[in-house]
Length: 180
Image (tube, rainbow, N blue to C red; front, side, top):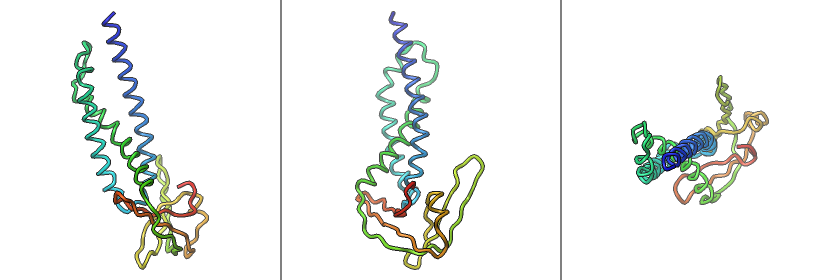
């Protein structure tokens, strides 16, 4: 009876871990969409990804007694640690985008001229729609949705809002781009 209970726990553990990993892939895609127009997206991922690594490692350490006591344990525990770390990085990065957006305030909104626009289509990947906008004599690339890209022309003025975050990850939002 005890052996059957341990087998059931191991099965539940594996299923939960796989579901969390699959969900993590989806969450990572959502996070990459939400941070495209951040001023420092790589620093954002570095900070919140590191926090996710630390939390994943702590959770893995807390679960070690549960995994180590299973009689049919076939893999070294370091693999379980890696899985938990991989699970927490995208989830915590996504939570970071929510926190950052909620702690951000609009500093100003204004119209800026589109200097150029380009679309990159790749096989088996999402297309990239970018507008090059002149902001105070500085050219800035901004990502936008497919529909907004198609309805915007070179030389047209578009409305941009600048957000200042309390945690330091400022971003620009294309005001009338609904899907982005």
